[in-house]
Image (cartoon, rainbow, N blue to C red; front, side, top):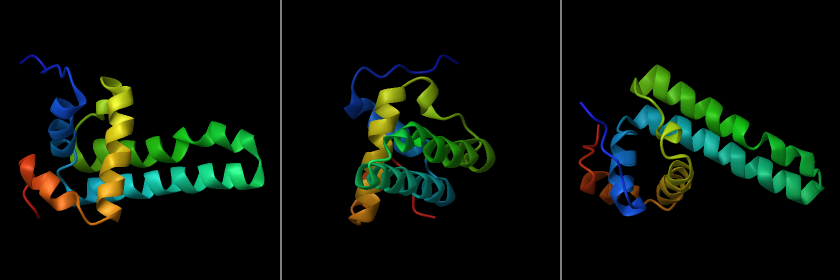
Length: 112
């Protein structure tokens, strides 16, 4: 079966959410994204800009554990790196602001 190609972020977003259908997968992403944000803020506040080079580490570490170990799929980062990054921060922000559930439901992700 050929993998579907997405032409816009709006088309990609529901796919991204379906690839994160398990709560544990999303939780691991939230941990990684939160650490990325904290590391970035720390780098800017302390002016230790070399810390910025480490930004991808917590994000990828937790995402790859989530996908390969928990969700049992491949991260969309391999095919859609920029949209995946954008979607990860969008999912994180919607989770923080308690607005993610309608997005998950619209994408066909049932609550578990």
